[in-house]
Length: 382
Image 1 (cartoon, helix red, strand yellow):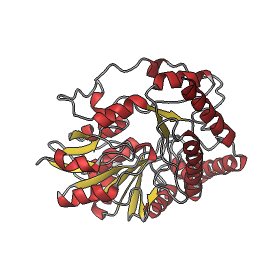
Image 2 (cartoon, helix red, strand yellow; image 1 turned 60 degrees about the vertical axis):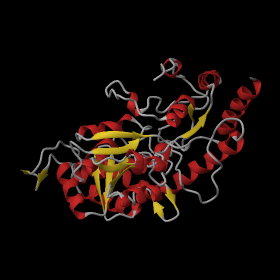
Image 3 (spheres, one colour; image 1 turned 90 degrees about the vertical axis):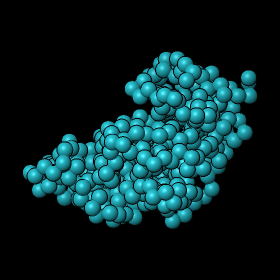
Image 4 (cartoon, helix red, strand yellow; image 1 turned 180 degrees about the vertical axis):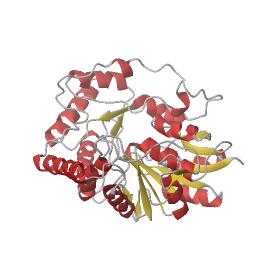
């Protein structure tokens, strides 16, 4: 691996950005009042832990994803780890997964004792289904597709490979809540799917939260034991696990979000459309989303530039916050020496060029236009 540019790490934070990368404040007074009322109801009437609001959250999550059940847990990482455990993944198993993701994907796999096998991505930054078959060995048990940046993987092609080779599918849908392609809604294809619902996500929690969805009653039962120290009836430990429960207050705060998620996704698609229309032909960017296309929720809006560091520093000087997410490919983390290193040329190229632009629910059209104007000014002035 080539040395990572220090510019990725050394860019100082903007104290008062003109255009912030994220804005997690709750500025809607009606929403804030409703959230405070939800907290007050839990505090006044209880229960505080694992009560009816968690059950309501699970029912709505399952219904939204079109699955038989959902299990609320403490984080998205817990969700993926528990999904793998519930499906019997463990030592000796190989799991095919994307080379491009946040390290949570890798940690969850390795913590089960399984071995990740990294597959290169396509131009959409998602695992390339055409490369899956050549990566399968006698030890391969499952495919873990990652819907990176909120863009759906080609689940039709992935499901076909899984059927032909008798493999499980565990979707890492951490960034993709609310996306849909034709009749497929994210999380509805795999044997199980794991979601992250922290405040940065399009469907935001108010702290760490996650969920696993499935249609298999046996998997659901095991998930519920695993999230509570591997117990049945809260006292009988049937297998070793830790505490991964969801808080009742967290569930209460997230319940109203089910009524807003589709509007939030459509708003982000509209912002992405404006970006793409103005940046097409200037930098590498997503195609302009057509009306009704929900195949990405644009958790991140990512552009590509061969002069990434120069462009980022220029934008920083203009008061525009950007991020590089995530610059280290999974096979290159110091905690996971990977020898021999897999051949992943597309991931290597994209990782060296990607920049995430500001995108959040408080972003104005004028903010997007300003960002685009400055990108065009930099690129046209070179």
